[in-house]
Image (tube, rainbow, N blue to C red):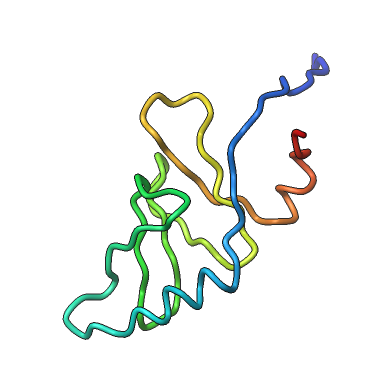
Length: 102
C-alpha cells in the first residue's frame, strides 16, 4: 500500500546560466586543436565544465555523468556531498521545486 511522503526542506546554493555567460564563452574564440575545451565558470571554479565550440554547448560533469547546461538552466551545488558536485536543473523545474531564501 502506498503512503504519502513530503520532501524534507533543504537549502541549496544555485545560480542561473545566462545569455551573458554564454556570450563570454563564445568570446573566448575558437581553438581548432581543442574541442571541447575545459572552462572555468566564475561562480563555480571547482566544477568540471567544458565548452564545445562547434555546438555552442556547455557541459558539466555530475556524479551521474556529463550533462548539458542550456541558457536559463540553474546550476545547483549538491547539498549532501562532501566533494563539491554540481548538476543542472531546467528553469521550469527549479521554479516549481525551490523558493528563494531571504
